[in-house]
Length: 337
Ligand code: UFG
Image (tube, rainbow, N blue to C red; front, side, top):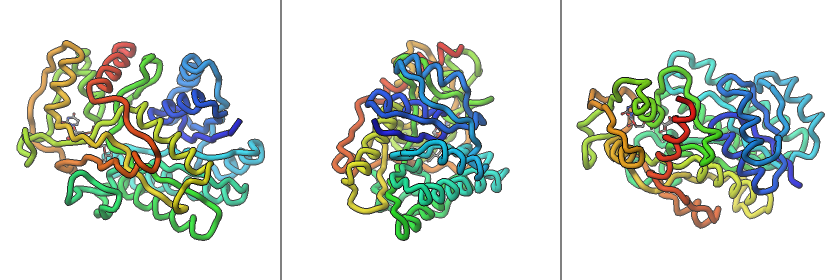
């Protein structure tokens, strides 16, 4: 049985990926520092899959703890690295926290991989590396635009650090550039756990429908898009999780075409904020209280993926659409109250 280290494995995307890994027969060890996740998720994963993954409460900024981890856990076949800070606004306020959390930890991990001869690495990147791309849908060859935030910059720098490392070690890496992950597991046992007032659209929508928030602000109604609201590519988190398995398998089976590859992971379909509201109202049967307000600073107009590279090379495609993902997010929200 192959053993996979999943850092940040109790987080939103991490926990769904652990479930899919276990479903596919991989043995999983999770590293998580619980800074933005709950230990309860471990039991939830176990109740979905029938197997308790191994768990180590380690802060990846603690280099000696990582060294001890690799001494204890021999024969790691691959690493999926989710652990990172991800709040765009917070990264502007606390840039050093972001560079430390997202870059120092990546460097420590890559160093230990080299020392311990672990070569397969999947990195959580983001479509944020493209900024406002000139052409839609966005292909992997679209250039990086100057990062809008320290968070976005850590994804650009992270990819560069990995690429440079693949040139001089036996590292083989795939960066997956996620578009907008939403939804939850169909069991409603795991999902997104936003802390405080949600910054992202879908948790704000579901909390508004629950009556936790009074009104959803739609940021901008005058964008040059079909209905004036901003367009994104919302992907079901379970589809996204499965893309990690496909990427990992590609590396383990040596099917990669170079030692550093990148793939867009989205649905290929752009949806406006108003499209999302309409779809949510349809699947939930709830009327959403919303109001169009000013644009949010730093937001781009539109971003949706050209997924053909992932479809052909990873032999992966999405199974769920926007309505499926919103229905799952709504079911999850109702379990949270
Ligand atoms: N939006 C609203 N009201 C809200 C929240 C969001 O109208 O209350 C709008 C935004 O303006 C945007 C869309 O909904 O047009 C999606 O916003 P999200 O905050 O959900 O997602 P973003 O596309 O802004 O950000 C996401 C991730 C980031 C990542 C970025 C890459 O959250 O981590 O995609 O483009 F960097």
